[in-house]
Length: 455
Image (cartoon, rainbow, N blue to C red):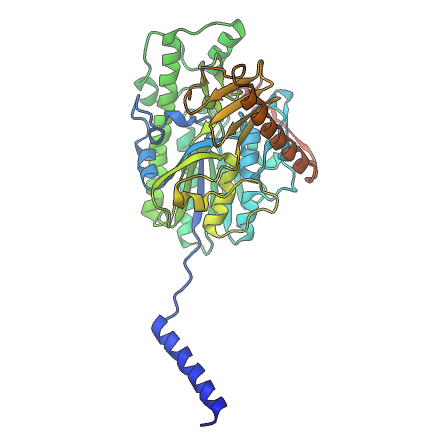
C-alpha cells in the first residue's frame, strides 16, 4: 500500500477506536437554575448555621445549609438596603455605583444603566430572569429591574405586612414551579422583609417568644421614641425585642421550607443553585444603637449559604463580601462576569474551604468607613467618633478599642481602607450618572414611614 494511503488508514482506525471507546455522545449538562433568597435586616449570628443556640428558629435553613456551603464571615458593603442591593447586583463598592442617597430626602438615587448587573449577565447567557420583592426602595423605577424579564413588587398597601413571606411565596412559587417545563433555565431574585422592624410576626409566632415583662410590642415607632428620648433600655426591653425578632425569623424559616419543598416536588430543586443571604444586619443596642446604620458586626456581618449541583457541603473559612456573590454565581453557572465587577469569585475557594479574601474586606455607611484585614482579623472604623480598632477574632463583640495602643496597625489598615475607597471612587467615574431619580408616591412614603426610614 502507498505510504500516504497507509497513513490515512491509520488515522481513520484511531478515530474509529476513539469513538468506540468513548461510546455514544453525551448531551451537555443542563445549565443550573439560580435562586437568590434575600432576607432584609437578617444578621448572621442569630441563625443555626452560624452557631445560634438560644432558640431553634431555623430548622429549614439548617437543613439547607447542611447540604451546601456556609460562608463563615460575609461582610455587606453598606448598612442599609439601597446601597447593599446595588452592590449585590453590580459586584462593585458603593462609591463605584454611587447609589447612596437615603430615603429621608424623599428620593433615592437610581442605579446607572451603565452597570452590567448580575441579572443582565444571566439574561445574556440565555436565562429567563425574574425578581419578586417586598421592598419599595428597590423598585423598578430606580434602576433595580435592569436585566429582569419580570420584576414585581409584591404585596398590598403595607410592605411590612406581617404575612409578607407568605404573600411573596404565593406569587413566586407558581412562577418557579412553572419553569419545570420552560426551555430556559431561570435566574430569580426574592427579597423578603420579615426580619425588618416592626418586629411583628403573625401568630402563633408573635406570641411564642414574647418573653419578659417589657411593654414593648415591637413597633418601630416605640423604639424610635426611645432613641429620640435617649432612653436606656432595660434588660427586659432588649430580651423582648430579641424574642420578637427571633419569632420573625422562625416564621420566615417556615416559608423558606415551603419554598424549597415546592421546588423539590416540582423536580427543579436538584439542578438549582440556591443562595440565602441578607442585605445587612440589625442592631439590638449592642453598641448603644438600634436597627441598622452603623458598621459594627451586628450590622454588616450577613449570612451567605450556597447549595447547588456539584457543590460538596462544607464551610468557607475567612472573609468574603457581598460583592463576591455575583461573580461566584456566574462562575458556578458558566456565565460571563461583568467586565468591571470587582468582587472575587469564591467558586474555586468553596472547593478548598478557604476564602479568597484578598487583603481584606470593606464596608461603609454615610461617611463612616471600615476595613477588616484578612490576615489578622483587625477591623478599623473611621469617621464615627474616635478611630476604632477591634480584633474581631479575639473580641468578636467589639468591646475593646485598640486604636490608641496599636497605632502601627491603625496606620497600616488605614492605608488599605483609603486605597479601597479611592479605587471605588475612581471606578465610579467610568459609569454614566443615572438619568433620573425616583420620586416616591404617597403610598410608598407611607410604607417608608412604617419601616422607619422617614418621619
